Length: 526
Image (tube, rainbow, N blue to C red):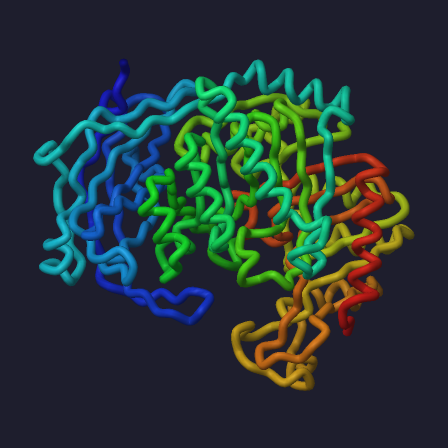
């Protein structure tokens, strides 16, 4: 079997000083930044990903995946962060890493798992420290990746576009009510139970539940995943590193202790266009090999139960494989390339995907968003958590596209999260009178000054920190084309793990149009 050391080899590592990081609950965590450097040999298409293993005193191993960048024919990881002491899991005993090389459309694991640093050394080296990496203390690497079959994925795409009904697509809406019949919560638990039953009926099938969600922090969901794990279903979870590390949540601690495969993704690119920190922002779950859920929601229904969110479910083996292509790539595999038609009835678009248009170029979510707005003929209905100057392939802005659509006679109506449409600290307490005096974001000002109707939506009651329940990210164009997913309409999303579903179907669009009107009727609009 080929080994990654033939193509790259770790040379030295760095650990930085302690820095404070804060989570959504204003809890402070002191973390150390780290970096690993490699010599890379040979091909220009070579890529390296690092799998970091953090062994803690509570006998838990936390695992993370980290991208690398080129630097003068060498590669170095992007910045990653280590939490030396966890309230729930104890102090770091040892940190190791393995790595994966991508070359010629396949992933190759390293033969060894290398020592990064011992827990005691984290205490000794309080300032910036740099050292060489060698084979001393290295052990066998057991981490493996997987690639899907590109030809089969192409057949799936072609079939879905010829047989839209085969998607079995159902829109989902939370409506700020956890027990509403359209809410995804009962669907999630029903599909977990169905996967367990199928696994027990045929134990040779090795069914999996694959969770790729920015944040998982819901007690019922955590309990059910652990129950599935105990009943023979392989459970794999991918989350953003911040949600997995900068937390005192019992849910994450229980997942880590249970033996569920939990992997944190460090998405830390740097680019002058980025407005906020990018992250692993995907929000989808694959149940077995038949069912998929995607939407705007994290699995945090305990905490954010009042949010208005949206999403879709699919019952299709082909769609499952298309999502699994994304899932395996986040885990460290090579994402497979296939061709798409931007004008087709269905497209699944991923920010780091290799879905290619007929001109051979990759067609990404932000390309689709701006192109569909330019193609709009009659109406645009847009509901967003946040909007900014999202730029397209030729640096054209989504704000410009919406304004041009309005000027050529398209009826454009926009609903925004009112609290996040304003400048200033969103975590600060304001009276509602003070809130409404806060200046709007420049992108929102441009839309309103162009004459576009922009509804700034808030919850029905005043709270110390003004609250807007809008967390959806969907658009309906010409009462037929629906854009749905996890992608926020600003430039940071281009550098995050994010997905947009494009579904061109009037029956799919109808409940989204109803939801749009219901938001305006049920919530406060300013």
